[in-house]
Length: 427
Ligand code: HEM
Image (cartoon, rainbow, N blue to C red; front, top):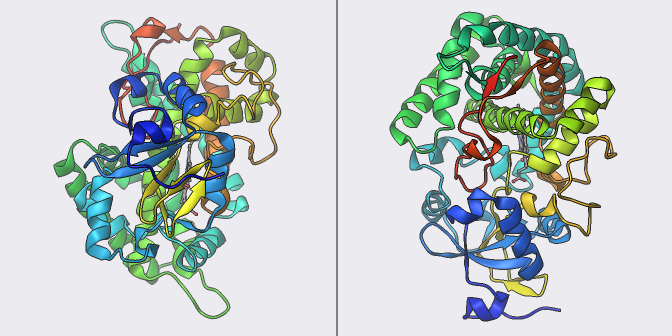
């Protein structure tokens, strides 16, 4: 059944328009979006500039949106939206203006046929073999960071896991994968941190400019003397018809991997560690049986994954969804946080249970998205999570929270579930 767009949002949804920056909603997104899933599964919301948007919270509709080609990732696919309008829309969605020229055309921001081409080219370089071949290095990087933790213990006897483990691990792994020389890695760590710090546009802009130049120089050097890492593979990648990535696409792709793979994985590690420490029975099971690690990572992705909602999807025509009519040109947020706690899909969804069974890709949960934009780095992120959780608790058996659970501070950012700090005692 469908209804046409109602000018009165309260009448349309039974609720006031959702404001994604609402502090109450962000303080406890599971309760807030859970309530919405019950009362208004396809709800009207307001964008930062007050323009209309939609929020879907049920597993079925989240997947329906992500499966439906009429919902586009690139606003240019909507009739009547041009590049200027797109830049304005992206800024309104919270993307800093500085980013637009570089990352408006990433694989995640494109639709077929561009998406098909970009995804195919990058998939050829981002192979299962390359990811599993990285495991010994992920182990080594993890071991080195864990060894260094005692050196970061502060005067109060605690160490911040976010700063000294959760963030450095994925950025170092990306450097390793892309082939950034050891000497340049501190720079990448700094740029990585500044790129994801949305609140500080000046630092973000300079990090972006420096990083683009650095990647450009790396590409020039590889063309002279090729190696065998991901950057070389991306440069060399070709399809039968000779299609390849342009230099701008190459730079954009490397930036995408840094941005998409860095903060997400870091917060999986942060959120997951906090969850295990506050659920000692689950931690005990993992300790007793480390073979549970792959399942545990899927369950942590479902229960406390870092992404609350996907990128907006733009209606390329009027679309009926869950009893609402989404007008052409309006954006829809598919809320992973709602889908992953949907009682229609998961038994006792609010319970953390690391023995739940998942298919290999964990397709039942939507923590890595769904459909054609399903996370390209999921296998890498899962591998990092498995190594991080297993080794952290193995190396520090007496690890404990250095703050009460309700003192942990969550960053109130729409779209992201992230701790500001995770103070721990090494035991
Ligand atoms: C796409 C989550 C790690 C690269 C996505 C999407 C989600 C996601 C939800 C789909 C977004 C949408 O449809 O709007 C995560 C989480 C991660 C993680 C939770 C860590 C726990 C990584 C890593 C990399 C990566 C490590 C690469 C180094 C990508 C790329 C896409 C993507 C390139 C776009 C794919 C496409 O558009 O076809 N990720 N990701 N991600 N992710 Fe991840």
